[in-house]
Image (cartoon, rainbow, N blue to C red; front, side):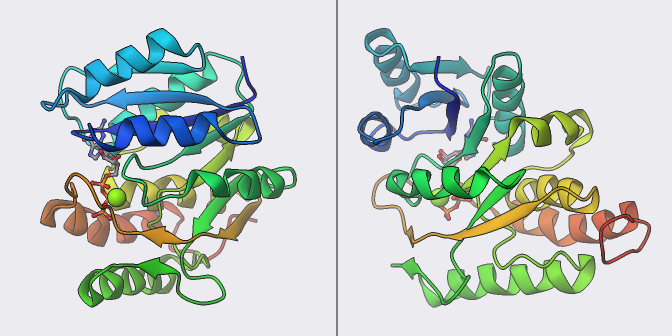
Length: 241
Ligand SMILES: Nc1nc2c(ncn2[C@@H]2O[C@H](COP(=O)(O)OP(=O)(O)OP(=O)(O)O)[C@@H](O)[C@H]2O)c(=O)[nH]1
Ligand SMILES: [Mg+2]
């Protein structure tokens, strides 16, 4: 068993999953892959099972239904904590996140509890997004900072690496949200408890295959969740002393 686990949630990622798996297995560092499939209707789960049957580094969790990104990651994190993984990644299965950037995260994770991939640190690195999506993402980051004080440039991003100790302390059972809000909530729980969080620059590319699962509900959930997080931190805009 490797020290590093890449958790990849999937809903209808038939075209992308084999490519993601192949890119991960070709990395210069050894990693395991956990696919958490939300009952895809396009055969993704079968592809995942076939990949797992031929590669001992690949594992699959099958959810009974599409439960949202947050639930998928929480199942994946619990699976990882029941085993001995030290570096536990979140990564999308749409190739928006470049697997070749994983070694940069691992380097930063030597001295951090959580490493966030950021599209916006030191300039904007987003390819093929409409201006509307880019503005939504940038405004979300500024909004999170204004309300909660959390100073990261890309708090809604979903390419990140947790150290085992951070996930153990994150109180996953109490996490409420999905989608972008899930990303903000888990990072906020660690930030307000004083964990060390680093950002590494990433380049984000709009998906070519499959379709986005972003909905209006996901955006609204994040809008309100930010206020709830500020309340949970006793109206403080800084970590607990
Ligand atoms: N298991 C599971 N996976 C999901 C669910 N919703 C989305 N995913 C997967 O989570 C990853 C991120 O979803 P995307 O649709 O790319 O959403 P996004 O990255 O927030 O939005 P875009 O920027 O538009 O791509 C993809 O690999 C999806 O297949 C879900 O409810 N359950
Ligand atoms: Mg995506």
